[in-house]
Length: 145
Image (cartoon, rainbow, N blue to C red):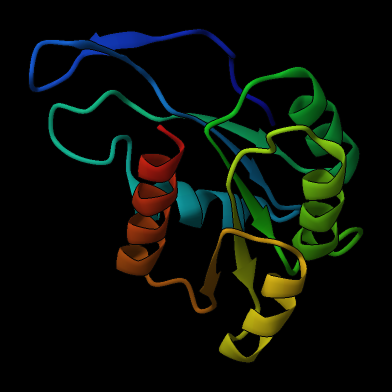
């Protein structure tokens, strides 16, 4: 399932127009995608623009969207069945000029070293803790601004 891709702007707390952060969320499991969206919420803080979530369930869709659209953050499921997010991350980091930051969701804390091999900018391990997911997304989006 993919969402609409529109350029949404809103006024931030200081009255300056800010565009909505665009996040590409990949997992072959729709419940994982839902967990991430619910953990982060519709926006990072009060007064901030809503996050524009675009979902992808296949690696081909991720590669296509990463190649042809602009993103503020990629969230990739390292435990996806067909192609895991770690291999996909390494591919994107090596193939896309100025690749956006990537957050990897690992199956367990011991897999953090694999995420570093993948060139990921951030890692959150399962079970997904809503606060840790939200903090990781906020940190990576702040760094990409």
